[in-house]
Length: 202
Image (tube, rainbow, N blue to C red):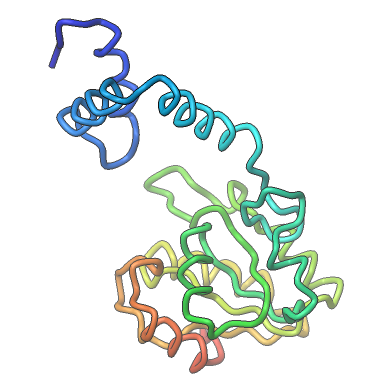
């Protein structure tokens, strides 16, 4: 799909590179931006640049943050001995919205998926093992999406953690099997957290 402007074509190409944005949607967005005044466009562009240059990963858990330590890890009211293992920031937002969890998080940055070329070494696993080895945690909650990839990752983590004196639990199956965790409704997800049970590899 080409327009009368190569500049507009380039903008459409960039916008359509975003997930879930097709060429037609990208064209609609580009035309909307074209109608905005110069100040609005500067603010829009600066927000994107600021996002890329200044959003950090928390040195403690891997969450995204404006500082080297995220607000959750810096909060003395959170239980640092209970870690909830999640895939990415969307799952933290989902769990936090329930108000049911008062511990801290460990962000893997994905799940094991051989089909996508993602193995254990591509994930943020070693810091979690190190915390278990140093007796920094008493409970690790597996809160990955109940998909085949999520279950595979849970099993891999279980094998890595089972030799340490750590209680390994998982969410109850209130979250629909095969669904992404961040799409679960707050009530079901909150219940799954509070009713978590000991992880079994069988």
